[in-house]
Image (cartoon, rainbow, N blue to C red; front, side):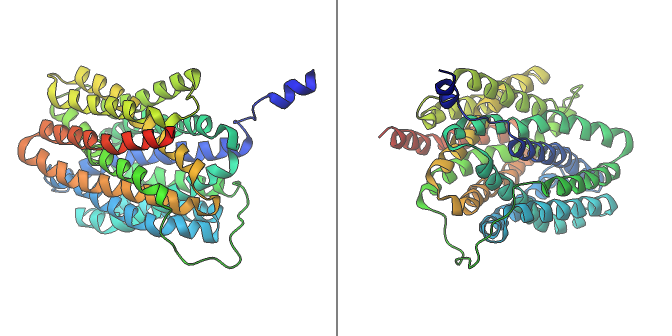
Length: 386
C-alpha cells in the first residue's frame, strides 16, 4: 500500500536545481527593476525631455530583441550555464559603467549592447528551467517559477527610487554591479552543460513558436511604457509612492499565481489565455480612463499584473510541451525577441504619444495593443482543445 502511494505521488518541484534557477531569476528582476525606472529620471537630470527619457528602454530592448535571435541558439550550442555566468558578469560591467556616466548620450550608446547581454541571461536561465522541471508538472512549475520575477519587481522599484532620491543614481549602479557578480557566482552551480559536439547551423525557431510570439509582441507594446512612465506620472501627480504601479503590478502577479496554484490549471492550461489577456486589457483601460492618482494606479496595476503574468506562464509552459528540448534556447530566444521588440517599439511610440498628448493617451494606446492580441490568443486556445 505504501509503495503504491509513493508511486502515485507527484514528483517534487522545489528541488535544489529549481530553487537555484528561481533565485537567479528573482535577483535578475530585483536588480533590473531598480534600473528601469531610475535611468529615465537620471536622463531627465542630464537634460532629456519627458518623451526622450524613454529612449533608453527603446534602445535597451532593441538590443535584447536583436540579441535574442542569436543568444538563445548560442546557449543551445555552448551550454546554458556558461551563458548565464558570462552574461551576468557582463551585465554587471554595464551597470558599473552607468555609475560613471555624466552625459545622457553615453547611456544611449551602451543601452543596445547591454540589451544583447540581458537577452543571453534570460534565454539561458529559461532554457535551464526545462532541465530542472519534471515533465508531468511543467505548468505547475512554470507558475511557481513565475513568482520569481514579480517578487523582484515588488521591492526593486521602491528601493531603487528611494536610493536615487537620497543618494543619487551612481550608488545604484555600483551596488547592482556587485549583485550581478553574485549572480555569476550562483550560475556556476546550475546543471552541467552538455553542448553539442558538432552543433548544427543556426535555424529558425519551430513553427509552434510564432503564434505565442505574436501575442507577446502585442502585449509588450503597452507594457513597454509602464516601466519608464508610470513612476514619472506618479511624480507629476505628487503621489506619495511614485513607483506604486510597478510594485502593485508585481503583487497582482503574485496573487494570481498563488490563486492558480491552489485552483489548478486543468488538462489544457492554454485555454485560460484569452481571459487573462482581457484582465490585462481592463487594467490598462482603468489607467487610461479613471480619474485620480494612487488608487487608480493600484487598481489598474493589480488587475493588469494578474492577467499579464499568466500570459507568460501559459505560453512558456506551452512551448515546453511542444518544442524539441535541444532547441528550447532558440524558442525562448524567439519569444524574448518578440517581447522586447514590442517593449522597444511601445516605449518609443507610447513615449512620443505621452510627450505630445499626456500620459493617458499612452495608456489608451497600450490598452488597444493588448486588445489586438486576443484573436491570436483565441486561436491558440482552440488549437489546444483539438
